[in-house]
Length: 71
Image (cartoon, rainbow, N blue to C red; front, side, top):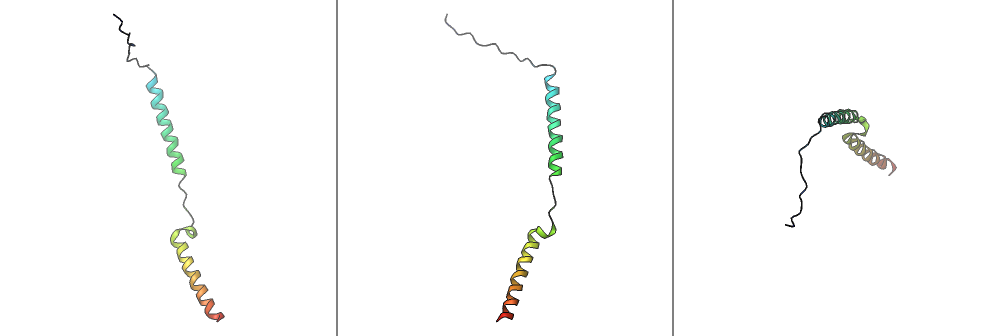
């Protein structure tokens, strides 16, 4: 007698909605791939980790040699 009315559910799907959504997804993916591909910068050889370690070791060797001349 006092039952609440339930909302009706329809499985309505607009005709042109999917095409725009797919197009926008594809457009976003192409833009993302362009940005991601251009972001890859190759660093200089002098700023790579092995080169910096070699320079640090050679600096310590140079300091050791120069310290031997001072004494």
